[in-house]
Amino acid sequence: MAKRKKKSKQEDIELAELTADELAIIAAGLSLISNIFTIWSLVKVRETAESEENK
Image (tube, rainbow, N blue to C red; front, side, top):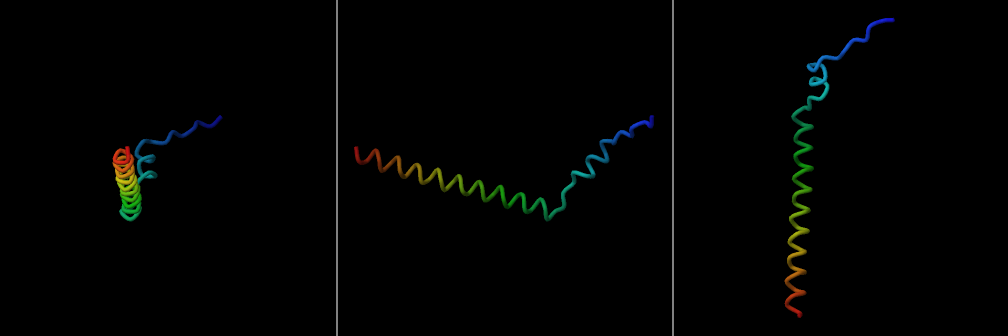
């Protein structure tokens, strides 16, 4: 039987490296998600304030 060749950690790291463009796209996506949650929380605060006003 042939011995299995183990991958070194360096090879795994090299495969997982991302380019600057890929990192920028990921950052933009995370920023978009953050902004969506911010807007959503502001809408909820407004709804809560309006419902308390009507009581």
